[in-house]
Image (cartoon, rainbow, N blue to C red; front, side, top):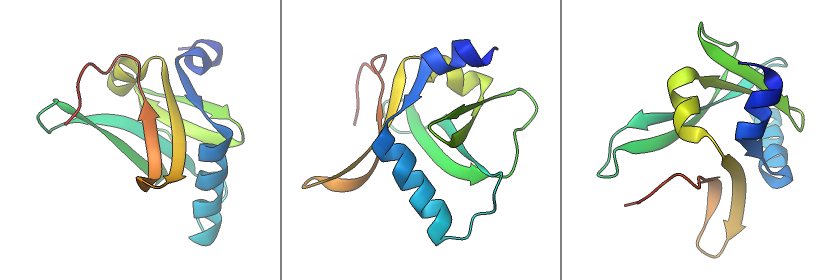
Length: 108
């Protein structure tokens, strides 16, 4: 998949990008690492989102850079994440990364 196509499928807000950079700096994550974004089967809705830092892309991953953050996404997850925006909230209802997925039909 081309970078241009992937960029149109997944977005990251400035707030989420800044928080990811802050976490990487606070935890001495080495330069070159990226943010692995994915979905895993579980829960009563069937899928949960996953985030983590990874040193490199795996075989079959798509890799893009958005707002200074390298994203690694496997092909299966990309299918489910199409149109998703990764955001970060620190409001009254909690603090953390939020996946705004227009394709999600239900949540727990």
